[in-house]
Amino acid sequence: MLQEFQRDVGEGSLYISPRLSPVGRSVYQNLLRDALDSGSPESFAAALDSPRYFNPTETRETPGGHKGRARVPTTAAVTLAEGEFNRFYIRGLCRRALREGVDRLIVYRAKLVDEPRSESQQHVGVEVDPLTLLSDLRSNIETTSGAPMGPNSGLSVRLPT
Image (cartoon, rainbow, N blue to C red):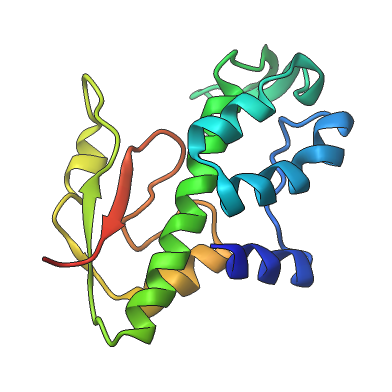
């Protein structure tokens, strides 16, 4: 996980959420590094959970294509922390799989939800190539490989049993 984080920092490609305020942007990299080194998604969310770290509003587009301002959800810290921690976890697991000669990872529901989205449910149990997934996650926030499928999908990958 840390090697993938350092890769992004070195390449200047570390994802910085547009929801973060200037103060949040200034501390984000260090908070993420600390969480990946010795924390958890929960500790990362707790560290990010300051109103000073997020913009109060953001621009959103309605289904009809109109743009407007909306309040940043109070769950923004949890959503960002869980999503980014999971992306780096998956990237680290992909690297391990490649190093150990494992040719597939299995998509599974890592976070239980009351009503899972049908789009994400369709990916549960799907086998993914670790090299393809690693490349996809290095280039995209939302993947085409099946996991994760964007914020709050609840999906991750595991080694085959």
